[in-house]
Length: 137
Image (cartoon, rainbow, N blue to C red; front, side, top):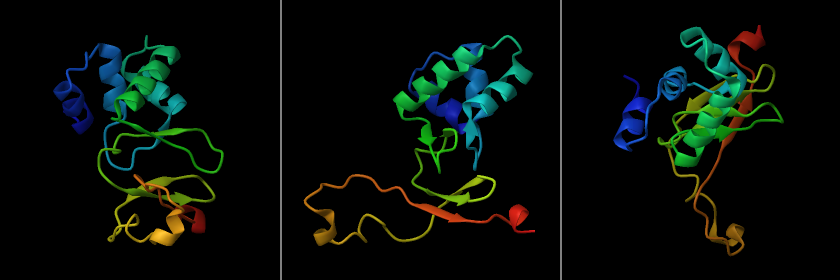
């Protein structure tokens, strides 16, 4: 059973066969699939699942806070099932591959008070960019 499925069960979220398949497809570390990729993988497990059902389920998971939408450089939105664990992203500027990273330190604490311009800062998103090993060859 995936961590995402466990979290959804703990919330009492009704797990239909379609919702279960979407959650199973999203299971794992470094998973950052587009909605179309989720749909393609879900249809391998449940051929009758519709694209609309996948999009609706992803929207519900985002609303619940169990999945995070990740957008980089105008590319298609990707869905990250690890939003419940603090992390940042490492993105390949050529192919768009995304990896979760957990560097030390606290980026929120690193922002000086003078640079907050009176904002009450509640969240930080850090994206590291570079070229992955596959694209570097």
